[in-house]
Length: 153
Image 1 (cartoon, one colour):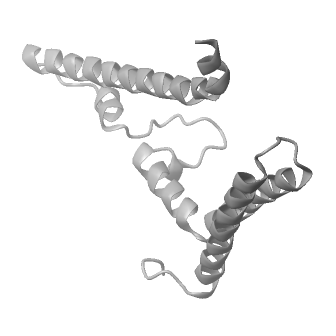
Image 2 (cartoon, rainbow, N blue to C red):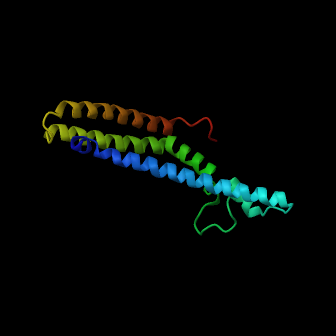
Image 3 (cartoon, rainbow, N blue to C red):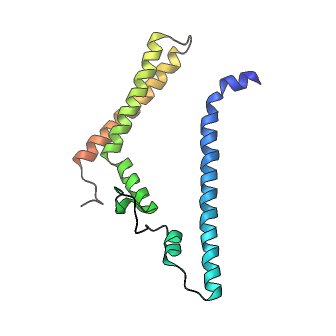
């Protein structure tokens, strides 16, 4: 059992992210369910539903935004679309190329220095694969800068 813990200690982080992400989704569900229950109560009593409550259910923005927040990126759906366009644009491909290239260089350096005995071959193999991915991301970034996207003006 001790060997399993020392071999797979890094799994604590993805499992923790999964647990906290699920908890966040559950809290979001509870909040929207409570808001919908409150709207049902208002309509059952024949009262008018406050617009703030309707905005909260529709995830719209409030009038009193914190200073410095752009109104266009406050809505969750708009933020998601912006992140997707940002991630798949040329800047996102360039960022992925740099990060993947740095990780490939770290694997190659580790294979050359032989810090872990017997891991030279697998580290070189991983470095070659990550290098190919970095070159592909760099090509996508260059193509994204040269060729305009059809969905953009």
